Image (tube, rainbow, N blue to C red):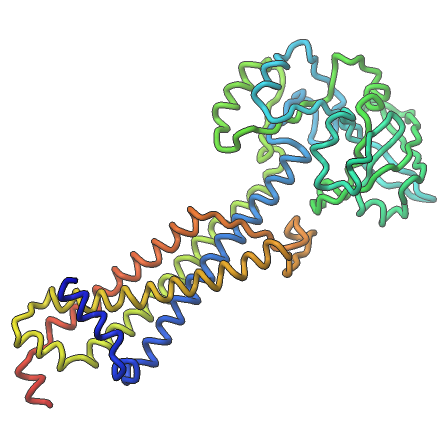
Length: 404
């Protein structure tokens, strides 16, 4: 063991050192590191957890990419795309799923009023992608006259399972005579995303084809989900090579820019919290090391008399500071990981789904992110300890012994 490591370990284990004047300040500094690591771990895990939770929900409900006619809007597909013009097989081989969909704006009459809704026609065989949002989804197969509505619409309109609901549709934007359809409610879904839950009714695409009077070669849009979320550029190139330029290709972030802009704000908040916590923890460690140095002036003077140079003595106190930081980091990780695992599996803390698109606080425990943030805390805190360690070079043995 090197001399510096040996002496640093002896200082830390020395009983009088533990009961010295600097002891309370050192404990506060370690506690500040524990708090900093705990808050950083939580902010990273919750921030990225909420981001990915929302992105995954949008991916399941509306796909990562959306292919439609340029004339169509987000929730209406009056203008079809021709499947014969698309390399459908190539898309199926390179995407997790490719859903054929048709969005039909409609109205549900309610006494003296009406509720605007959007009927989303999907293939019955593709309903599995909504399993996480639909109650008893394993028993549901959407037939031509059946629908799944959101719990939000169910409560608002007082519509229950097995109820028959009348819909009014229009074939195109200029139609004045509505097309009347009756549907049986066979399922309820809850995505916690108000943009969908407040308007989207899911039904069979055959019904949509019948309303629009299209044959099976036409659909309103394609919704595609990525196999590999991190390789979007490759998939964009694949899409453009498989789909004619006369059709519009949008990413989910292009369809819902306001929501994705709000999601991206979490990155700023995460980085801000990390910065503030590192500054607070680092300043406390500077204080702890400075007090330790001042408390050990006689020891420093004695070491200088015995021939130790300033760099060697600085190294002793830097190692001392590193041990204190490491202690705080270890305890901070133990506490934060325990609490995060409790939240992840028991969902103790809830959220307002109307604001956060989730009814609980989602936790994403990414070992790489946690290791990286811990490493940043340790490195920056150590770098900040260089400031108080410079005081050592100003301590003169003759002056110290005269004062004593």
